[in-house]
Length: 217
Image (cartoon, rainbow, N blue to C red; front, side):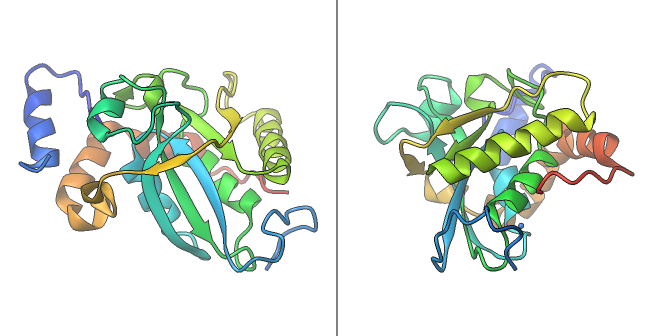
């Protein structure tokens, strides 16, 4: 993430500080995108992939979440290229999950409640098209479920601005560099420091506190 805190030279310090020298039973009969398979994947972009990875790995039924890049045409993009906005990719994660324990629709509900789906210019302190929100679908069932979920969110009245999250077909997902994987575990202090300063959790608490909205059926 090119974490732009917009506080002058402090942003340089934070960047160095964060990187260091090395630089959620089957819900409904139509939610059957896994086709009886033991595992399925969901690919989602919600800004900083450290944060999205950390949030999804807490979901019961999710086996693994991998940070990476998706949506672009460039082959084997690097973090340096994506973070600088020099590719057509976005930071994304791919969640491997057990569809007998958690459904694609339920994962989308987690996703919606952990991002700002009204921001077309990035997420929180991370600005640029490479930090915008996207739901990538692998098949027509995932596409249908994503569109229905987005419509439920739009009709819920939670947000008074349009939901701009894209729903698009996944072409290819590229795994990010190893030091980005499980960053929130390997660099816990730095991660917590970044996340607090990003304003993500403050926004989510303000929007969702006291709300009970069913977005998954």
